[in-house]
Image (cartoon, rainbow, N blue to C red; front, side, top):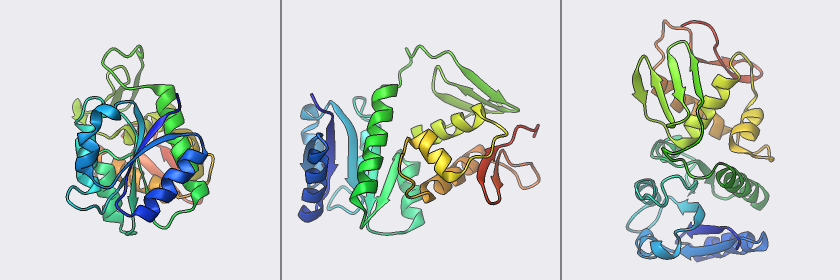
Length: 239
């Protein structure tokens, strides 16, 4: 059976465009015009591998739907792509901060859209849902930051830092490759799985979120450094 993608979009033209292009790639889809109808049908979409949510919706908006998705056990680790007509960075930050994995600004190109969809589904199906019974036994540490990959938890100075799945995967990749400078396209390919060099701003937003959550101080050497003309690297020096 083909993977199921759930679409919540109240504009019928955009919804039909999305469903048509997803179907042309062989995906099953369920489209809803609002969050209430989607959650009423949760038993019928329990095998969803991706949610595509418009932010500006009547009643329950996309941000609220995403919050509910993240607190619904069967959906909590399913990737979420947010659609927004507003190119406002705070909208994007808010979406990522409450658990969305990605955002796409309208209008969007079909090629890039499908590339992102495929990348999220490929990574989700490869990794599978995260659970306490995971067989991973990896611990990654650098200075005062520790990642317990068995339990999918991050600590700094013994204090746990709450992160979205994508922030976690970005930090883990950079810590495993500390000292190496990566371009934004490199990070999109290795962390998001994109084979399309599209919206690299999503990397910048996630880096800013990581820096905020890690809590670097002005007089400290930053954990995640900006490498001029290249991108970013995880600092392997003692802090």
